[in-house]
Image (cartoon, rainbow, N blue to C red; front, side, top):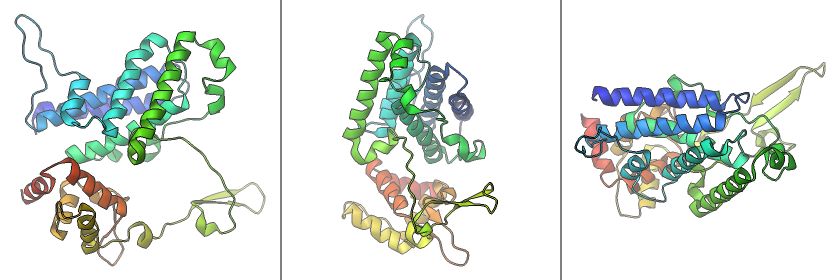
Length: 320
């Protein structure tokens, strides 16, 4: 890897971490604009590193007696994500649009729909960093920081709230209302892939008789003050039901004969993309061979569908 590529990746990660630190500090009034600037900068640097690593140029053709210019974020996105319906691309483009307007509008809070847009972008970044460069962001960022802080009543920060109308200019209210509506329409159009574009932020609490059917169990101590919060362990036979042969069969069945993979390809993919660290994909029982999730099958199918020579390239990299 070239030194410039390594530097771009390192600076991209620093910009992303700083974006997280900024957006997770509710006391910062300028955090919407700050997050947008740093987030877009992180993606621009990461995509330029990807372009360089793939042997492409990151500068426009040199014009006579004019300084050299590197590619804009929009051009970078178009060169890497060729589909206009790619949810990751749409997420970055939408936040980029907010960045271009936020500086003129002065937004003192983050509406809930925009927070969902930010949260999806925060989760997309480490996935692409892992996929493109086999780098795990968890080495630098604790898991808790990946969830954006939202510690106030959404209703009080809604554009329908009378207090918001009194504190914000009419132009800002109008633009933000249109912007949030566009986010909702885009999410509906994306259907099943909308989760990579905008994550709906909801909290639902229900009391159930059977604790085995809950994700979190709350129990009061004997004094009525002490409490325990216990995570109920998931059954890996349900969350990761496939062995390597079964996973291969599931993938080939979904590919419907258009392309096929072998059990060996599963090993290649795991190694090249360092996916053994992805607990949602691979589970390692104490005494048995690895087990794989349906999500892993979907991820592989998505890669094969998007990238024409995905399997061929993976085999080559694994052999090298």
